[in-house]
Length: 138
Image (cartoon, rainbow, N blue to C red):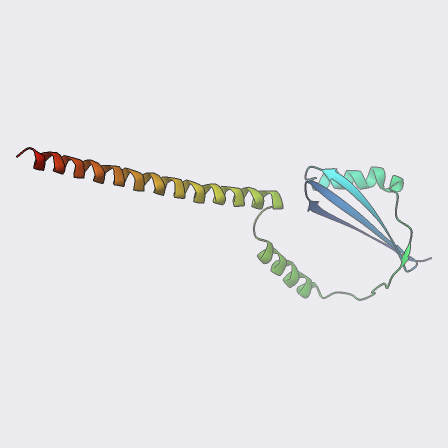
């Protein structure tokens, strides 16, 4: 009896969350793509796999190499830590919201700076006008 390997990868692909099921059996790879919509919770994914796995339509099998190497758990932990360091906090949508907030912040700063400069210029012109009126009055 041959070993069957399965893997599910869930990722954000504008504008939906997508799951890719990979199945390796007898050295051949077949894949199925499922669109979840909103960000699925772990229990929702587990429930989906339990209920719908046998209804999934996998692609035709393609020959592939199967690695039979055990991975060092410390190395895996280091790689996970490194990936978390690179991606930053939150989901992709949270990072997009954060980027939007930063853009709005810079826009607000420029608008307020322009208003400050305009107010300063207006006060300067008003002061100059008053000085001219005082000078003219002699």
